Amino acid sequence: IWMGGFTPPAIRRAARLADAYIAIGPIRALVDQYRRELEAIGEDPDAHEVASGFAWLLVARDPEARWREAREHFLYQINLYARWFGEVGMSVASTASSDEDLRKQGFLIVTPEQACEKIREYVKDNLVTRFYGWTVPPGLPPEWSDEHVQLMAREVMPAFR
Image (tube, rainbow, N blue to C red; front, side, top):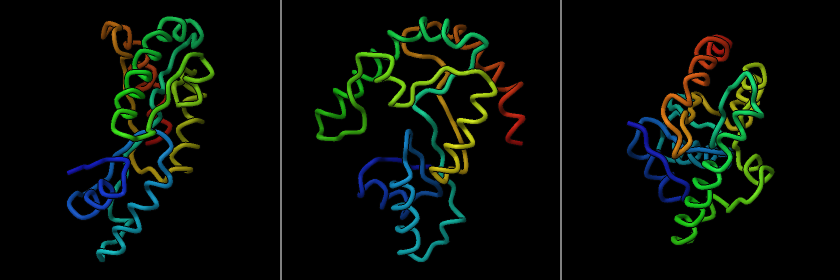
């Protein structure tokens, strides 16, 4: 059973009740807290997995063309999340109005080679044992992600096996 969250009570609950922790984005501080909570209850942190990833890491042969197709969908999603989190006093997501704002929050469309590099860095920096990602930005048809899924399966995932 995986449990996630971004607050100290949620992380304590995950350590106490779940087999593993899941979150999204830059989570090193949360992982450190999760590991401390596991130690505090007598559990071995290395026996528990952590899954996370960038808000979006999509793979394409022509990243700029795919970015132009996804941009407005990314903006819609992050601004909605920022509003929802903001309404409950959490700063998990920030509003965005530019490509730079999106990229700072982990919205990336890259080549397969760049994806391998980004994932390696992310896993190392955040102590992640399992990487995950989303595949279809909201509002785009499922087949829009076919190229991404195929490139991930054929060119990115083999680098991590």
